[in-house]
Image (cartoon, rainbow, N blue to C red; front, side, top):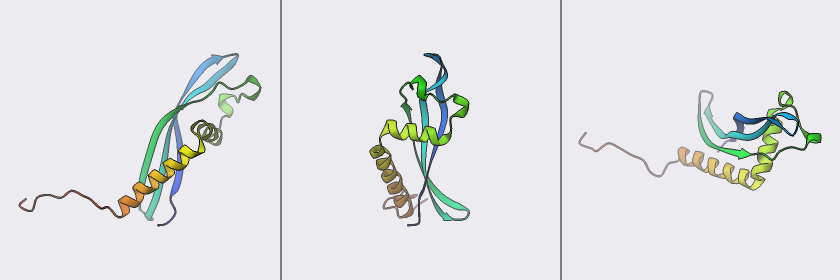
Length: 114
């Protein structure tokens, strides 16, 4: 099996407009985690997990203004909140689903008299 590419997407982000003097504090992240296996340049298999994670309120000293938040920062916050073991389990599940799509053991068919 060729390499599976994993990707995070975060949309939407739930914020608190003002908390302890900080403005637009990200409180909840809605995440999508996808695994893509390219069959050829025009076809691929994609499996996806979705969920939400609540983030702790940041300390004022370590607060990042909303306009300066990057995807990499949110990825780090989500992985930390979920735990690396959860992310590894999700990768195993998604890669297992892709492996099954490549070599299914069950299926559905129309009756022979149709």
